[in-house]
Image 1 (cartoon, rainbow, N blue to C red):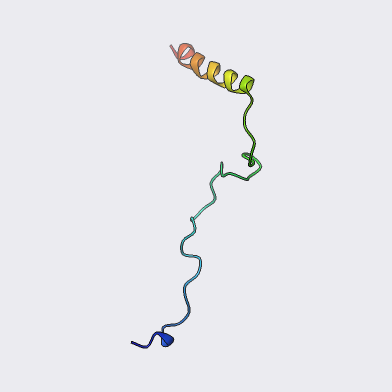
Image 2: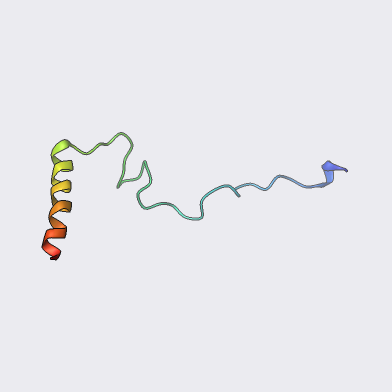
Length: 55
């Protein structure tokens, strides 16, 4: 088989079809940023209260 006649390699076939909305390194989710303990507790309390409000 003559591999020199096969043509060049196909590039860009192993990339995702779209960018994720929460991908690392974006404006919404920058690298190295971690939520503070207070923000985390606030989110957890809000999530715990949500089922109580739905009843």
